[in-house]
Amino acid sequence: MTTENVITDEQVRAYHEVGFVVIEDIYSADDIALMRQTLDELVESARGQSDHTEILDLEPSHTPDSPKVRRIKSPFENHPVYRKMGKHPKLLAVLHKLIGNDLRMHGSKINLKSAKHGSPVEWHQDWAFYPHTNDDVLAVGVMLDDMTEENGPLLCVPRSHKGPTFDHHQDGRFVGAMDPDQCDIDLNSAVPVTGKAGSCSFHHVRMVHGSGMNTSGKDRRLMLYQVAAADAWDIRGMGRVGSWDNYIDTMISGEPTNEPRTVPTPIRLPFPEPEKVGSIYESQTLLKNKFFSNE
Image 1 (tube, rainbow, N blue to C red):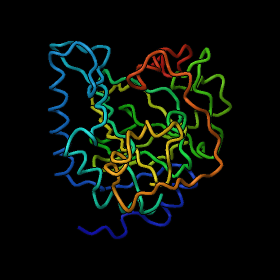
Image 2: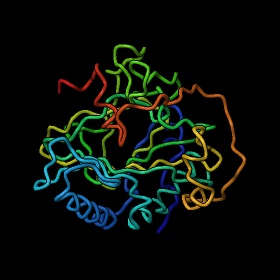
Image 3: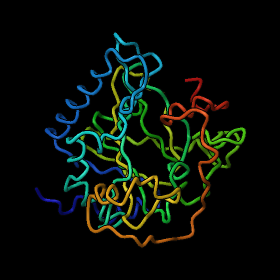
């Protein structure tokens, strides 16, 4: 497998300037088929479940007899297929160009926007959830289905990664979302991030983004790998890493380090903690002013 010219210099510049970029054909048709099959098996495991589990986050319309899952939690840590795909040579080739050779997988999830009932995600910045000592941190969106303008694609506000860290609190507690009327940013300028299955989007950790409900007849399943430079450390503390051994276990490229690199960045901590925990969907249910609530 060749990894040369997976990403162009122009695409690297676009990522740094605009804050996101889409690279086609990172994963083959066989790779996507395997990830879809694995995902189908995980969704089927929700049959008989009446509440969220450590791995499954359920849609509000879920019933034990008709499983509907909106998120798979920590697939990189919990399934060998997704661990392997998180170290795919083409993926690493792009990441090396964007944030360096020494890389750690600090989180992962699969968001499932199933046809007709996929939940929206309100406007937010990943940086508000997990600020690090430096912002060489990004999210990779692995498109398991074609992502179109009709099936609830990721929406990114260009160049918002160069601006402030917006308040994600409500009534004094972290709620995991921005109040669209209280942030000085044109949310209507957001660009839909689309692409064919097998493509990947890469968005900066400080990018303002969200997504509407999937009201189409097509599924939109998106694997999200959260990748950080090895010298970017979560400032919420070592407990977020788990242990040094866990830090080593989540390295996907290069060498680990116990010397964090620090740069000045606008930071707000996600404390006091949200009243509802478990996933972004749960914490955002408390948001009073929802941008996507009328869709």
